[in-house]
Image (cartoon, rainbow, N blue to C red; front, side, top):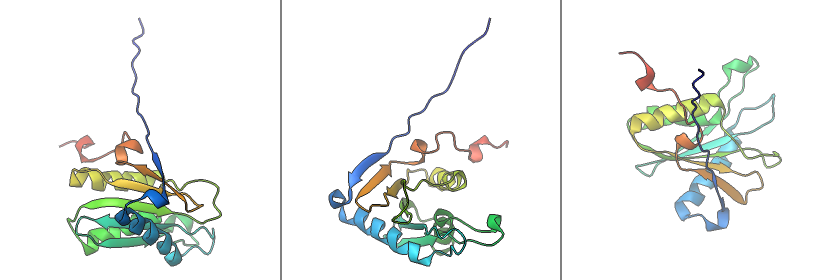
Length: 162
């Protein structure tokens, strides 16, 4: 007899108008949009910006950095996360904002590698990291209340043998 079982998850993004954001959220969005200016994207011309809000009130920016040898580049989210880990070790990441070019057709969605890195930082700090995905039209923001909503089966140190 075949036994049937499965796993399911719910991916929840809450949409909000920028005009309805709290001031700290609007600051995060604005810094993410500004971070695009630091993108090095001579090949794709696709500027991505990321901004982190840390629990100490500091903001850390990141932008995608391309290289002619494509695997050698790095996404905006990871440049921000790794920079924060060096500049502010052990400080909790409250939120990350991600923005893409105004002409893009869809909301920005972090790649699998970035989601995995974000999930690891969230796991380590033992508190959820809010994720703000800024719609290219600049008027809407989609918010995930933690990485479980974006990467429900993320890999972390608890999966490793002792």
